[in-house]
Image 1: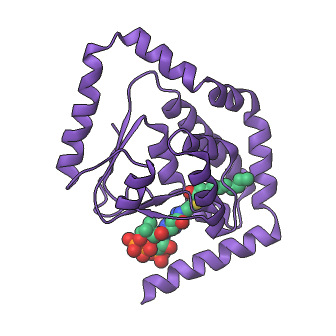
Image 2: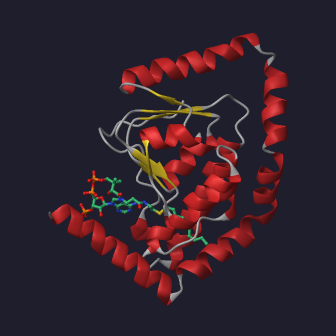
Image 3: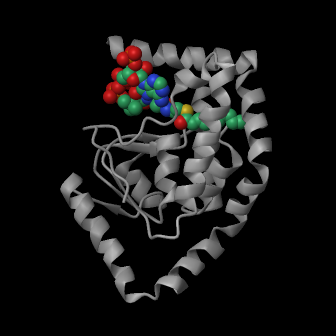
Length: 208
Ligand SMILES: CC/C=C\CCC/C=C/C(=O)SCCNC(=O)CCNC(=O)[C@H](O)C(C)(C)COP(=O)(O)OP(=O)(O)OC[C@H]1O[C@@H](n2cnc3c(N)ncnc32)[C@H](O)[C@@H]1OP(=O)(O)O
């Protein structure tokens, strides 16, 4: 079960400061850590559920998409908003989203970098249930997980991992390629300019 202790943020996604003017000695560790987290969580043999008790943009949304079930508290936002930062969600972010919502919804959401409210996310299937608060989200998560007590654990595990096999296999075989794509993409001046503008926007919002 994945949940957070911040009162309003489930996860703000990747640290933009690691992508803005990236430090060559850190960028490899930064990206391979994310790849490894995705491999471990998306490829977990255990049943997993995200209790999303706060905003969940980009990498935060990805974390929840790694889980089989998502329960979200009201009045927060969730989505893969990368295009709003002038960056591109990698193919494994996209395939994680496609495991939850139909292609058409994913294409519209990804190309526009749309963030969904809790109710909107429920409507398109990006989340599975709405909880009234964190305690309710945890109770609902436990109820979801408890149903697997009646399912043969090996049959459940193999079914899950077979469904996720091609995405997991792609990552295992292409970690280096994916890292090189990331490094060359974030290094481009036009991408750096977009990240700079996005960070300025965040600061301006905070100053209000
Ligand atoms: C080829 C592949 C190439 C690239 C692929 C890369 C994939 C990237 C994935 C990502 O995850 S990118 C990150 C996307 N995240 C966001 O867009 C989140 C932006 N933040 C927000 O929307 C809000 O901050 C919030 C999370 C909703 C929280 O709002 P709140 O009002 O509570 O806080 P505030 O906005 O005032 O922020 C406080 C403080 O935190 C800084 N901040 C917020 N998010 C990030 C972040 N992701 N990275 C770094 N810093 C972040 C914000 O600037 C403020 O900083 P300050 O106190 O120093 O001014």
